[in-house]
Figure 1 (tube, helix red, strand yellow):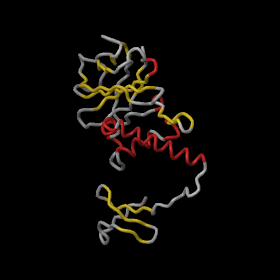
Figure 2 (tube, rainbow, N blue to C red):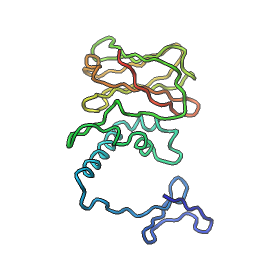
Figure 3 (cartoon, rainbow, N blue to C red):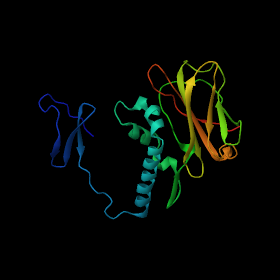
Figure 4 (spheres, rainbow, N blue to C red):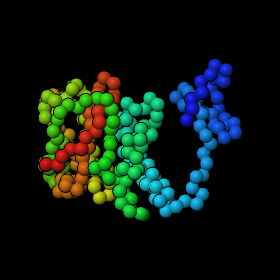
Length: 212
């Protein structure tokens, strides 16, 4: 994808031959016209297309996390493209056709330059079988008043089953998540956690929370 910027052409749109001009984030962009590379696709190509679709559908279900988790990467790409870059279908999709699902243990829920500190997480059932508590050691966050985001995914279906967000402070290091059967079946879930810097809105890399 080329980015022609010229005082003579200004903001250019339209097509010339096999090239198409458009504008994205204030820049002229030159792209080749889309062609159908799979007029007679192989089984592998069809499966890859299906896996790509699985990731796209999954991304829609966690869009709220994507919008905050990949802010550091969106200067030159969209939030969804940033998510796809960090979660290629060849890595995160598991199963055999036609039963493909996203593998939560391979998932990257947030990516960024921020530091979360050398913390050790724990997940425990509290109150009842449908509630779990995600915690981290006190006094380990780089900044106060930032946000912590947590999400629990079912390892079998790949679906988001519970999520939580809250302000991180030096004297409060817990997030609660509730979902039917979550506590009793916690060993069949993967929990991700990440921190967002309140100063610039950018996140740290997401981490998988060990199940205790």
